[in-house]
Length: 376
Image 1: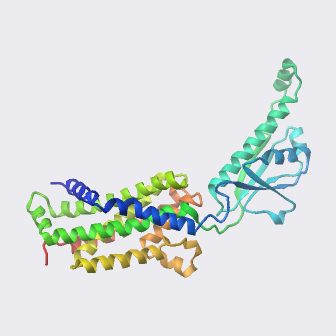
Image 2 (image 1 turned 180 degrees about the vertical axis):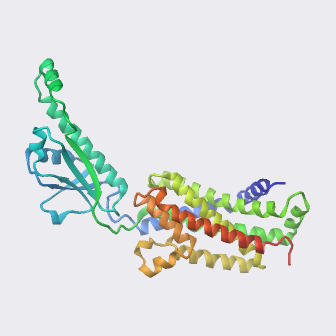
Image 3 (image 1 turned 180 degrees about the horizontal axis):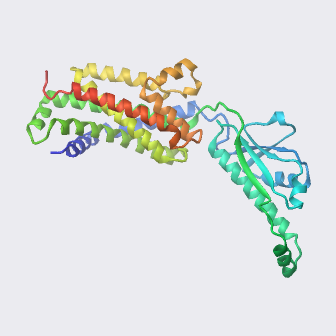
């Protein structure tokens, strides 16, 4: 009997529990609905992109570009001076029209603040490119109707790329994660705590009390395969919960999960490994089931509240935010916010993954140390 057999058997028994589906999906989605409505999006930015334009040229061509940008899906705010520059601003430089006519290269700048929504910025970038292409197409249509004459002019004059669009950061903006995009990851993390700690710890205590662990040890299974199987089963239970809730959130609430689902799952994997070790540890040194239940509820609520599951950590005082990184929940919620709300990639959360790996190893070592096969 290998640790994989033990792990899959444990997972199978857990899934067969009548209340498991309720704790896996129904109750978490109810919480997500409450949290999502309580922390609604403060603006319509996720649905309608706002773009500010600073026109330094004020020419026919620059005005035409602004007009093309103003359609039913985008809100365009024309700024009058440099001081009004906001979170997402397209800067049209001076002599824009004259340089285009002279065949000189022109650079547009799309500034975005580091905390602004990445999805909205990408949509604005795409819309600016579409508007530029449409204008250039119209300019070409004004050329002589004689195809041969147009071909000769084209061959005689080699055009450079006349317009380029550059994006750059412009300061830092404090964005508060909210809505279902915050609620689904937060509830997923919170219920991994409840589900894995409760099922994992209580099942281990009951198996020890019934003598099942001792009987397994008398089979060809080794001590390492038993504890390895128990740890893997709890890790898989946590990953099952987060995948199911992410999919349900995507289908029911149209949640945005960032640009890298794999990065989300990777950081979740190490978090689930940490909680799996905690469940074995608690189920090993706590002898009474009622004490274990109360202890798990207290620990889960403490980690969820201070770790940013009950409310966005961006709303908390600086001291609370620092305190949150004592717990693995603080690290995973910070990583989720970076990936979902602020457009960061895997490279930017490598520290989070490393810290969660350390948490995993610490609790796994402690679980091995305190793990007992016999009832004492």
